[in-house]
Image (cartoon, rainbow, N blue to C red; front, side, top):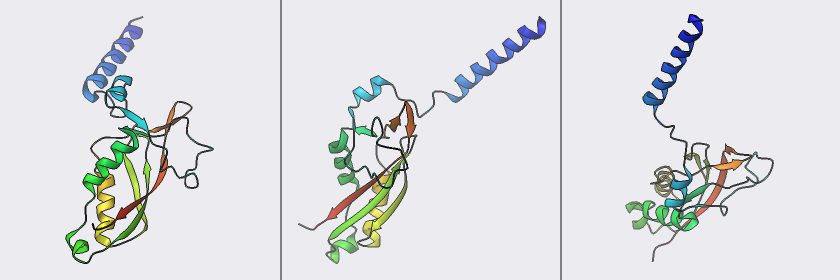
Amino acid sequence: MILYYTRRCYYFFLLTFLVIGCGKPAALWTFKQITEQNYQEIRYFYDEKSNSLSGEPDRFPMYPGGSVGFLEELEAKIKYTSADERDKTQGQVVAKYVVNREGKIRKVSILQSLSPGLDRSVEKGLRNLKYRWFPAVINGNAVEVTFIQTFDFSLR
């Protein structure tokens, strides 16, 4: 009987320590956060060929403001380098990236390069977004999703 209560107290203190010491896991979103920050699904850049899923996700990855918010933030972050501007480099960079289960962009790779400076600018812009994504979901489980996106560079 004493062993039973000792074990329960041990589990209680362990659980309390974990909750207080670790805090809320970073990967948990609340419905309130999703609605307040206007998270919307982004389907446009989804790459069916690269995804190892058995089909489309039940819910695609979500970003505040949807495609419009995502593209506006990328436009503000991705800039011409001074060397490329001086050389009047114009064209497209095609990037492939993964939105992982934690809502972060990982595995950025350049499929079509324009110049090393612009390639780095695209990679840096994708990795340093202001907000995290809400991951794609299949059967209630977060899954990784691969996107392929084209970035157009033109001097006006």
